[in-house]
Amino acid sequence: MTTKVTIQAMQRKKARGEPITMVTAYDYPTALLVERAGLDMLLVGDSLGMVVLGYQGTVPVTMDAMIHHCQAVARGAQSPFLIGDMPFGSYEVSPQEAVRNAVRFLKEGGMDAVKLEGGREMAPTVAAIVAAGIPVQGHIGLTPQSLSALGGFRVQGKTAAAALKLLDDALALQEAGCFSIVLEAVPAPVAAAITRRLRIPTIGIGAGAGCDGQVLVFHDLVGLFDRFTPKFVKRYANVAAEIQRALAEYKEDVQARRFPADEHTYAMDEGELDKFLAALAARGEG
Ligand code: KIV
Image (cartoon, rainbow, N blue to C red):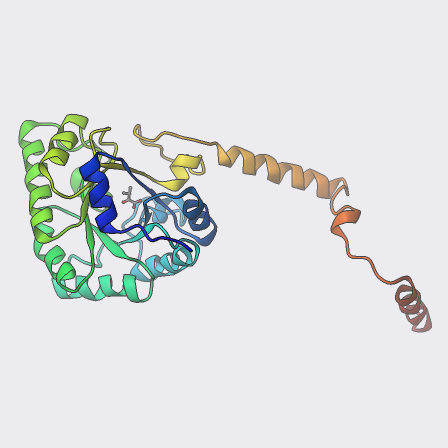
């Protein structure tokens, strides 16, 4: 019997000062691992464009790709609160289109909520999705979908004016109905100040320990993606090295005929084998 993490439970964690845990996952086996690890939230992030699909960034990711990965994750993880990341182009055109796409995340993808990037300019869109009964997580600071507008992977909110703008964005998203906000690549004192002023939990990634919770990309955390590793990543394992070692050993075993061994092979009843060989011989193929 699994117990689903709820928005209310995470709100209580914020009130108690108990950190909220969140990680990304994109497929069934990793979702199972996150489920077993007992994390609070699981994000099917559009970061899958980079770490799973091999794009340079998140912009090419489509709604259909997101739904495909959400469905696999939802089959593997029942307890964490599941969030589907709205991809670039799925929520900017109009609040109506955003609602239509957000509905797909719940109806087809099996998610509990959606996340979208942007500050106060997204408030009407957030309000429309929330009014449709769909919880929304905001995402401000470094927003990878607008990387070209931001001028690359850069820390945000480094000046007093930029920090105040971030705070105002966070307050606008809270007023629009967000249940939580991701703060990405923001100086720690700014993230802590925003966190203290919000009723809803903040989830930091590169935003210091003053946030109400933390999120990391699964592939960064376990060491499965090394094309680009931001300063804020802590690598807890080197899974890529272990997989590389296993592949090399498998190749050598096959080449040296050490694999498959007897224990990996199906036997056949001796009588049936004799009959088979005799039949082959009778056909002149012995
Ligand atoms: O797509 C993603 O993985 C994200 C997290 C980094 C928050 O947006």
